[in-house]
Length: 195
Length: 170
Image 1 (tube, chains in turn cyan, brown):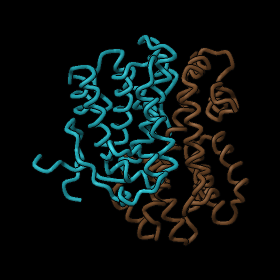
Image 2 (tube, chains in turn blue, purple; image 1 turned 135 degrees about the vertical axis):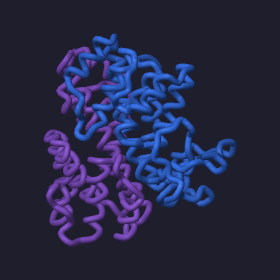
Image 3 (cartoon, chains in turn orange, brown; image 1 turned 30 degrees about the vertical axis):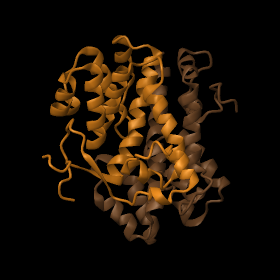
Image 4 (cartoon, helix red, strand yellow; image 1 turned 120 degrees about the vertical axis):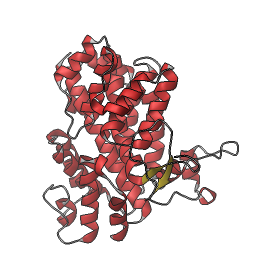
């Protein structure tokens, strides 16, 4: 469709669904439960309303997503976002990359890494620890995975513990999932009045 | 299975060859909730209570197909068991063969077209990949079911690949 964005940006686009979101006023109890809709919480994005077409997977995926991205301990939140961005760059999910690059920037209070990643993609030059994380995430996101034992050893040499490496595997793999939903079920479009 | 204990009963643990008592096993144990929820997501994608227009047999066969496209024989064998349990036969069972393109059936050809494209080259997907499913008579609800299945498999395959590297370099 016209207006579809094809370049990476940290301006979070509007997401235009390609399939019908469910009608919240006609949602059944199982859908309302999975959407966590309550009288005080009725704001649900079109993306989640599209996913509510398959309520069983939505109900399983939401707590798993939150655990992988926000669980206590292990890899820091910003570095999990870096894993998510690595996958999103490989899979060219413009919307996912925008959301998670923005979160990374907020958490690190800087824009240098994401500027380089959006300009140079997988070839972006980063500090050693960030470079090892980003490289592993992008290579794990190829099909099939191109991550190697050397990439794994680079994570260990950069100082990541087993707990941190596990969280990186999970966050990058999770975006192999999320990118495939977001990037195929809808289009990222510039918000009205912008671009 | 006790969800609080990570064991080889879990397919990702078994396929990654995680050694009991290893540092990788300990890290996974600390994320036992994630391992258990991954199993629940697999069940929701492969064996939902309401499969809609995508039967358990078709889901398992497509999972075998995607695992084979990734040359992941262990996961393919795992889903072959589900295929047999669902009684998949004929064209449904044929979905598992990456060389099968639908045998002239427009619906199966559309399912295959989406699954192969999104599994292998998600960056190349376009609006036409969804309209092709709609044109073959597949409703939006079933399109979301198919998308969730293929997307979950991408996650599961990468968790296994990553854990295997962790174990190999431990």
